[in-house]
Image 1 (tube, rainbow, N blue to C red):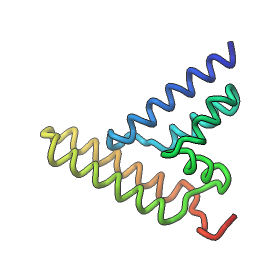
Image 2 (cartoon, rainbow, N blue to C red):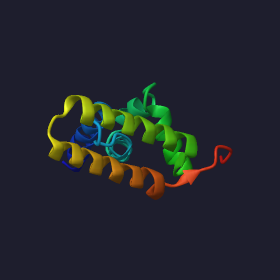
Image 3 (tube, rainbow, N blue to C red):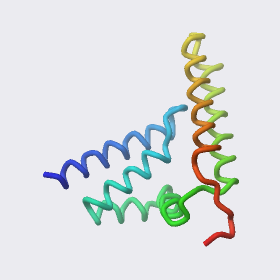
Image 4 (cartoon, helix red, strand yellow):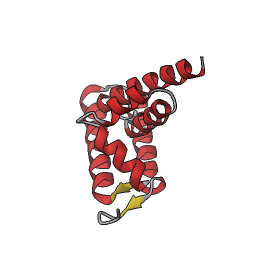
Length: 125
């Protein structure tokens, strides 16, 4: 029963992470890291499939091994996040209230990504 709950939560987290790729303000990386943590505790097969995925596997392994993100990765992520937020807020969204909420979420994401996640050196092993 415990294993089934962990797999279900891991799969839900994976779905949220994948949606986060396309929805500005919804983080992708934390959900993928949570998925890896839940899968490693419940299903070796699902964990291996996740870390062997050509799109997200190497990023998950690097974060797990190095316990942080490189400055280049952080800057690229923040740039991409704000690009999508501005496109969404000023091209697709007409409501000023929703725009303000989206900009607030972007600012929160920037603080978390920029200051709360550890920055690692490229050369650190």
